[in-house]
Amino acid sequence: MIKSQNNTTKRHKLTTRLWHWVNALCLLALVMSGLTIFNAHPRLYWGEYGSSDDYAWAAVGSSQTLGYVRLGETKIETTGFIGNWRDSNGEIQTWAFPSWATIPSYYSLAEGRRWHFFFAWIFSVGLAFFMIRSMFNRHVQEDLHISRAEWRPSNILRDVRNHLRLRFHEVSSVNIYNILQKFSYVGVIFILLPLMIFTGLAMSPAMDANWPWLTDIFGGRQSARSIHFIGMSLLLLFFIVHMITLLLAGPFKQTWAMITGGKREDSDHA
Image (cartoon, rainbow, N blue to C red):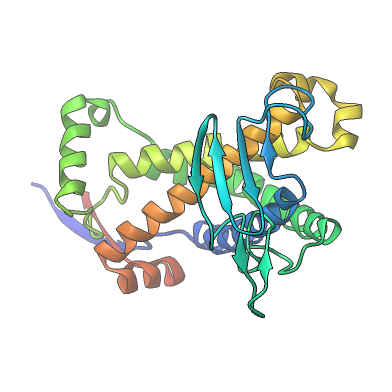
């Protein structure tokens, strides 16, 4: 005889919720202070060295009448938004990124670095504790583990089609993440975020002096800086997609679940 018993459990564990919101705050501060640092020299290179006379694979340019972003040989005009924009007083500024997108809101490389390093430490320590805790509370094994059946192309294609049709994962499902969510979360948490930390360390003169091998891994300090910037762009893309799916799936219910933990119905069979 089979008996079924339903137990209501939290959809999101406390450590996951705390890390989610602390991480969101840290990433916001890191991106905005990082843009302040980028404003000091808005050009990206590959290799160990780079200066205004060297070829940059990406750059933000500006003049009194024009703002643009250049990727390779492709130039995109961004007047009014990036490179050339008006401040709150109506005056034209030619920093790469506008004041509303940076911390502090005025140009100060020293203060931008202080903000960046402060939140980088909080972010790094939080990520380390989250990874360790997720192993012990089985968040990784139970919620993020990708089973052999989920790796099937038919399953992945079905999930892609469901997303294109705006059919999202049911909150009451035992498996709280679908395959696309697992791919993105595992990629961000265990690959992209650690990559951001190590490329950030590789750009530090102190770390370069003590751990020169770290810089060599990324092909030089300028390469580490380029990878760091690309990683930031991917995190912003992840955030945008995350917010779009959140709005389409029901923002109030999903956000409340991330605050309170939500509820998940697990069926135990005996």
